[in-house]
Amino acid sequence: MESHSAKKEDVLIYELIKHKLDKIYTDNPCYYDVGVNDPIIYNNTYLFYQLGFRGVLIEPLPFCHENIEKTRPNDVLVKGAAGTTNESGRIKKRGSHGGGSYITDPKWLGTKNCYPCQIYGINELIEQHGVPLFMSIDVEGMELLILNAMKKKVPCICLEHDKANAGDLLKYIQTTGYEIAHVTRDNVILTLKNAK
Image 1 (cartoon, rainbow, N blue to C red):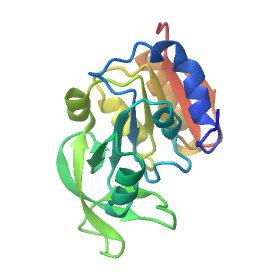
Image 2 (cartoon, rainbow, N blue to C red):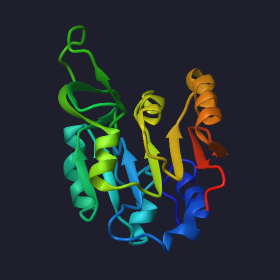
Image 3 (cartoon, one colour):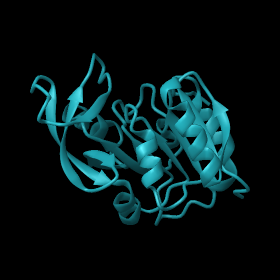
Image 4 (cartoon, helix red, strand yellow):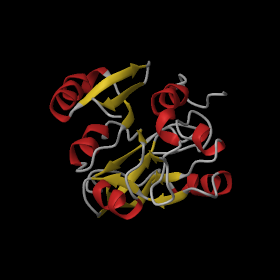
């Protein structure tokens, strides 16, 4: 099994949820990829796409959309950002190869590499598309904001982390019924306790 993730997170996720994959039904997606950027390289959901599963890809950067649509035509692409509520905002590109992005306050931000962006509430997206088996979240430091807003539990979550949010992540885990299944250099993989 060839990994497309930075540190084989996709293979780790597969091992955690493989016993549930045969129970996927057409009404619910297998995965959500929140902050796709590249649909193959360093991607936690492409392995599942190759295995024939489908999901919802959420990406605010407009220059990423064509590649995502061409590479993953059977997934649903949401052209915008995930957030806590539906609203309009702006997104800024950093660095090369996508390089990450973040929602910004247009009052203080210059216009270079900055794009208007529709923000979709994570609960509204789940209501519209269904609860997935797993969710990959890479939204440049906004991961816990999205997790704390979610009303429905996702059995497995892979999120980007850094030392700055470690205390908040631990607090989230202690109060929501999740446990740490794996930690890689860039990501933490959470599973629901006692999930069958």
